[in-house]
Length: 287
Image 1 (cartoon, rainbow, N blue to C red):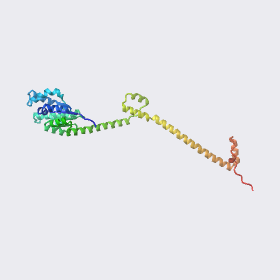
Image 2: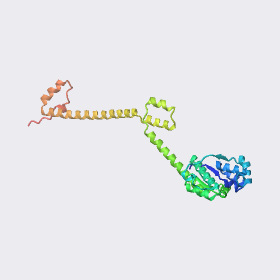
Image 3: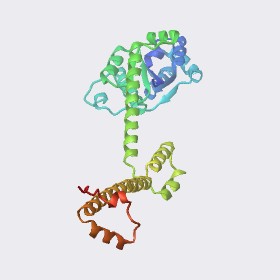
């Protein structure tokens, strides 16, 4: 079974509403990313520009180099995540929408990895679930801490991993079938072309060349020619035996019907005389 790695995204509530122990537990799970909108939000809170848990934001800013969390600018242009000018959204609602767009962008950029958004905002987790992305899911911080302690993926993460493994297996199978189909349609190269391309071909190409050499038309035609000669020889022998047998019957009948003419003909051929048992038929007894 194919192994699937994780990408973890951390949302603002995880920083402002938890403690460093939670951050460190999350960091143990795998590679952690911080959406750019979240990084900006935390800096503004730490500097007092906007309201929030300023002490937690400052503490996070100090621990960020040790946590080794990276900021990502990735985002998605999905229409169902677009913020329209007609929408009267609060600052927090816009932030949640931008975080969802970032999560979708990371998932699109890494289709073979399991992207897990960690958020204590129920509305944001519900929005992620409605996206129905094959490699994206969301969990709260409590589940993330339990995951870190037990080293056992949450059920939602296990489901995403299973879907990714099945998808990867299908892709590998399709690629293998395409490769085999292409190789079966490749023309058989001549010996000169085979020798030139063998040094540049891959292992699969070398295998195809071996097969083409083993079953080349030249060898096949040689085999057919030998088989043709063999059958011709047998047919010639059969024809010779049949002809000899027929000639013997005719000569024997001629000898019985007209012995004098046959004897004259035989002497003209210059062949040795026939045995007496053959040339002299039984004479009737005189009474």
